[in-house]
Amino acid sequence: MIPHNCAVAGAFSQKKNVASLLYYCLIALQHRGQESAGIAVVKNNKIKRNVGMGLTSSVFSEEDLKNLKSYVGIAHARYSTTGSSSISNAQPIVVGDVACAHNGNLVNYKQIAKSFGDKLKTTADSEVIALLFKEFVDNFGLKDGLRKLMKSVVGSYSVCMLYNNALIAMRDPLGFKPLSIGELEDGYVVASETCALDAVNARYLRDVDAGEVIRIDGNGIETILKINLKRKAFCMFEYVYFARPDSKINGREVYGVRKSLGRLLAKNDDVKADIVIPVPDSGICAAIGYAEASGIKYGEGLIKNRYVGRTFIMPKQKLREKGVDLKLAPIKSEIKGKRIILVDDSIVRGTTIRKIVKLLKDAGAKEVHVRISCPPITSPCFYGIDFPTKQELIAANKSVEEIRKIIKADSLKYQTIENLVKAIGIKKENLCLACLTGEYPTELYDYERNINKN
Image: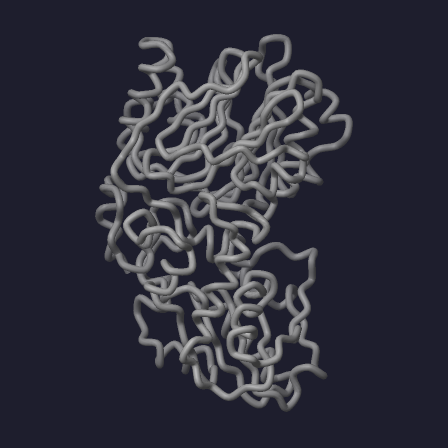
């Protein structure tokens, strides 16, 4: 089974070709997935789909978008966290008269999949969402069918669907993954992040609430179901790393959160240094905040090759390591002889930061002090982020001092959980901090045996 932390989008427009709108949404959301891209629309009362491997710009031509001309559609950019990267798992997935684009991971996928047997054509958990949706809605109607669906699937899911010539968007009752609504002059757009709404000049209205299902058609936008739980479980890693800094997630501006993380990281840090340097791009906002709070000069010591993707979300470890070599180049005049504070968002496996510390020291850095805006990641994520076993997590098996020695930094300091919560500005009980604490907000079903797996 292939879990995802991907990008989803949907659009309904009375006048515009939604395929073009969705294309630009996927371009804006490309940071969330680089392996495949797809668009599905309703055309002549049937679902028409176009998917391909690679970046959105390489999958779709202008002619493709013309052939997908429609008033309603959904889109997906994929990043698989386990399993094969293949066209068979590209989304949106079509099941009869239903199309589904899904961001997240179901923790009870295997149990559900057994009941469908040979009906499954992919190894993506998104397919069982589409199959259950069709089965329940056909038998019980839309509202009751959706209620049964949301009680049957457990885990993280923000979903855009096509059904009965309408766009349906839903978010799991704990709200793990983000989903925002924007208004066009003649319709609406739904997307994983608000940066996609900005890309198509849609006015941000609000988030799809946790446990909410909305329908958008020619009559406008309507909430057709709302499941209210006492707690939420918003993914903290959206704020730390995944979301674009110009997006708003659950009403909080990501850029401001990341700057606050940097300021709080600098508080009570007495290290002597000449310059604060970020790991681009994920460490930039926190580095600016650190520099402002510490009074130490901010500078660019590493230049990023913009044509290399995000190394963290590359599907294989060897590709991640090669990606670092191709991705960053030192500015030696800014580095040589300097005591450097190097700010990054997180340490997962330790591979990337070790290479960067070496890169800086080889370029003449006198000292490299590593500062991480996220607390130590010590537990697997089963909700769609790519650190599935403790064996891969350096902080699960090593102390801070041991990690410092492994990455060969002169000092190492992590953010605290308390300051992470403070910077995000959402109550601790409404955040998913499972990868930091080992406390999971749902039962784990398929993954129960994997909690302490090495």
